[in-house]
Figure (cartoon, rainbow, N blue to C red):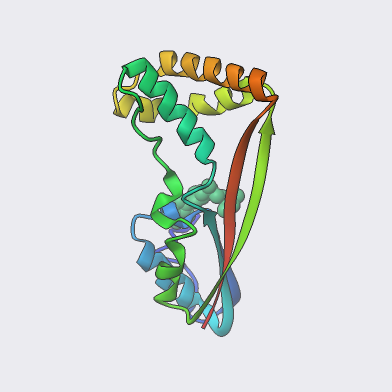
Length: 171
Ligand SMILES: C[S@@+](CC[C@H](N)C(=O)[O-])C[C@H]1O[C@@H](n2cnc3c(N)ncnc32)[C@H](O)[C@@H]1O
């Protein structure tokens, strides 16, 4: 594996480069964008993908509500969003530094959940964030399970709206 900010490739040596759901992990995003631009040919393209700031907002709401009820604060601290550093909303500005044409293609979707357990299993991955914010993890998960169970009993399902997207970049 190579570091996206130091690609072991000759300048203008490829017709296309993909950066799929990864630029938000890179500490120096502008440098990685410059590297992607460097390795593609003049009429080549870079395709990046990421999530919107609004992606799966219902999961954020559920977590904050459950944590807030456990902490007695009304609404708990927000879940840390990994993609926020290079979200679909922020990506065009980063990519526009190197590319004249940046086209965003939105990819919306909905996840319909009729059983709380897949959501609860996903929330098990929030433990490190909970610990960072002094949120009691097990109690918050239990509270989320109850809230979700009540929501599904009342409405028949819990809907999670997804919004990801692809950015096509050309010079
Ligand atoms: C969410 S995964 C996406 C994987 C794959 N592109 C996909 O769409 O299924 C994020 C990827 O970013 C890679 N990554 C993180 N920092 C990186 C860096 N500085 N340079 C290159 N790759 C990096 C990780 O190794 C991981 O494979």
